Length: 346
Image (tube, rainbow, N blue to C red; front, side, top):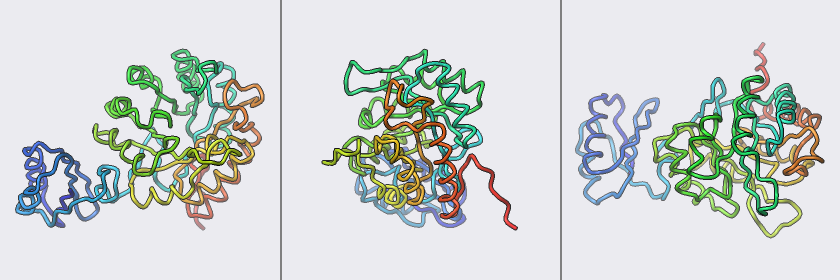
């Protein structure tokens, strides 16, 4: 349910509506607009509530929301959400590039990669300290030592960190070292984990599950938002289909769909979405053309020697080429890449 306040409604009137909602055992989520304030009502709605709220001072109308996802919908939150990490904004005019190795392997590997991606224009360093693997015999990350390496490189290079957290019990430790908490595809419906990352108040990136529908994905996002954490980013990383040539089938169409039904920013992961390094650049360009707010790309100094996902990792030279092409596409759709200075208009 949505309560639309009248134009020019006072703070006292808005507070009165919130108190009435909370007195009914429900939660109120306020979304200030340019002209109007919208108050979302979350919880078990009873039939008489609509009439009660419509009688309050300052209320223009009360609308029932048909979608099962509430807090992530455009109806509840008409304006775009902008997630801020230091001086970086995800969800605005800038295209944000997250780049780095799939897995943290050593200080030298991470430092060398961080320097290269920053020089090419990336503004966020990605790197996995904990790695979910289909096989228990594959490399599963350096754990807390990997987190410490990420923190060390961040201090030296100055790039904020995004890294994956896999269990509710590790949320506090990962949050201590990282700037963005990533919830991977395999954990999209790990609801206890989603609630824990939501409680941190830190930015969270939620990847789409292997076979998740858009509605399931947005309902998973509700778990984070329901904790009062609005710093949430969605990430399309490909879904499982009958096709075996690529690792996954990346769904470019979901980018404009999310922008239509949700206020949350969305980025694309063409590395996991394709599984092949030579497909990363064209798919990244397509994602930005479709409206993505950023991309996440795997980069490694020696992909042939990578302990994880070398086949989908770009070399430094290939990443630099991608960034150059990305700038051209961003310019063509009226946006710009965060790592490049915006040219002044004549």
